[in-house]
Amino acid sequence: MTLLVAVAWIDAFTHWVDVIDGIVWGVPLIALILFGGVFLTIRLGGLQFRQLPRALRYMVRNESGAKGEVSSFAAFCTALSATIGTGNIVGVATAYVTGGPGAIFWMWVAALFGMATKYAEGVLAVRYREHDQSTGRTLGGPFYYIERGMGPRWRWLARAFAVFGVGVGLFGIGTFTQVNSICGSLTHFFSTWVGAEGVRVVTVLGTDHSLATVVGSVVLAIIVGLVVIGGLRRIAAVASLVIPLMVIVYAVLTVLLLGCNLPRIPQALVAIVKGAFAPSAVTGGVVGSVFVALQRGIARGIFSNEAGLGSAPIAAAAAQTHEPVRQGLVSMTGTFLDTIVVCSMTGLALTVTGQGFGEEALQGAAATMQAFRTGIPFLPWAVTDFVLMIALVLFGFTTILGWNYYSERCLEYLTGGDLRPVRVYRWLYIAAVFIGPYMTISAVWGIADIVNGLMAIPNMIALLALSGVIVVETRSYFDRLRRGELAD
Image (cartoon, rainbow, N blue to C red; front, side, top):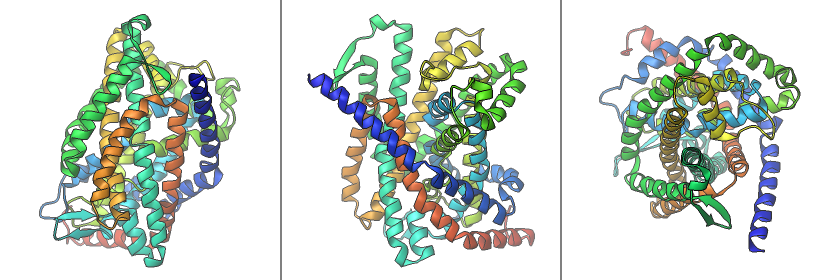
């Protein structure tokens, strides 16, 4: 009886999460994010396209003698650790299965305009940050540029952002989705290669889970605890080491898959574009309307690259840099690498191998693993599954670390710099990492989308309100650069 009640409660909870998710990620929020990106692109004269080569160069070139807690590259890796996560593998697969290939197209659209949004966030983060002389720490982010840029009477909006930021860290991107995907990939791997009958089942919170899930959640919670207690510098050190390695490994595997399916790539690209405007032509009417593809693509794109969410500027504010514009350019490369590069790898892998749709389709990590299995015929399935499992673990782990830092800074702003609640929060965060695997995939991604959307609203309002400041800063920087007053 207790088990039946627990199952019924979970089903009801999942239903209401889906309902609220549909409301939050309705037309108004999607229009706000897209309009913000398009508006900033126009006001900045397409800067993300014109200045991308310079931005990529700045990405790996640190400034010397500048104020800040960590190097510009370390701050970039910290931000990238939070953006390049399981959303690049599981999130793309979820969007693809429910929204069809067209969801990939809308991810691209959101990312191209989102680069201007991410640039604007980085500029404002450095422009309005503050340095704590007593501790040597640098503090900044949307709550600071809302309060200082828009004025004290908008402090309520800054506080709303910080509250939602804590929620995203504790219930959204930071914990549930990441550890759920990590443990899901572990369970899938071991059940496949050990055999379902060889995987011991343990009952947790009224439902059965594999021993791999239980052990994985415990080990992950312990490792996360050991790192996050060390603060920003330890997180940045881990991110700077792991991020480049995991992107290279995943890129090599994807290039192998695309190389083995080279003749299918043009057809896959056609399916992606056609699916964005006529999904039934590609999926036989199973997936649904154009709006479903658009909604899934943009929601998952924002989840993955976080453009407009307001998270990356919290890390950007800690960068050792003199120039807001320079850090803004570095920040926007995160969206380029995350979505245009890494998410596209997953999307093309799924499309060229022809994964199915609807209720019978594979979900989450299983869909991506199946794509790589069938797409690289000369590699044993155990090899591709193992590499993807490791990629998911590393992607998710670094995202957990990055979002712990973000949510701690949001909480620190809310408490007026009192670090005692932050210390308590760290233990709650670690507990959330442990709980994550025992929630359903639908509920996990639904909660993540809800708090993401709520967090994006105050940040997008601030970006639009302060767009004039961004334009002035941008013109000043490039004028001084042309006059030779700055080192390029």
